[in-house]
Amino acid sequence: MSSSTRNAYALAGLMAAAGTTHFVAPKPYDTIVPGRLPGSPRAWTYASGVAELACAAAIAVPKTRRAGAFATAALFAAVFPANVKMAYDWRRRPLPQRAIAYGRLPLQAPLVAWAMRVAKDGR
Image 1 (cartoon, rainbow, N blue to C red):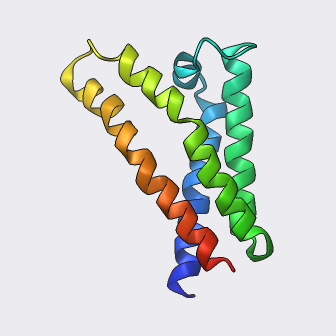
Image 2: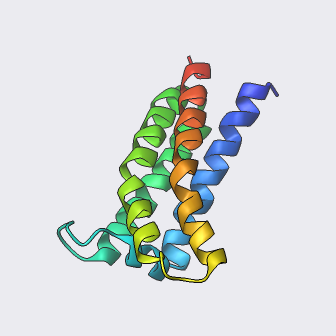
Image 3: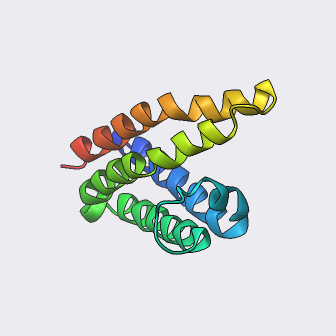
């Protein structure tokens, strides 16, 4: 198996794991849904979980890998406001929790880059 295939499967695994947690433990996700979005936070939690699972499936299949990786990059960008909300909401929590919340912000850039790399390799 090539390194680009392993890289794609790793990204698919991350997305599948993340998507699954939206259904197994939705409450933490509900709390970071920006309040300006219409509808209930739980609906957004489930919708983003479905999107992550769909991206995982698309990346796992070579014929849809490129499109799935582009969709994943877009999804990583789309959920950034939730990470900002989490960082703001957790600004007075103990240091370890603040570090997690603040650490999620710069983590989005390498995740987008990873997805774009998988898309490039998926040609």
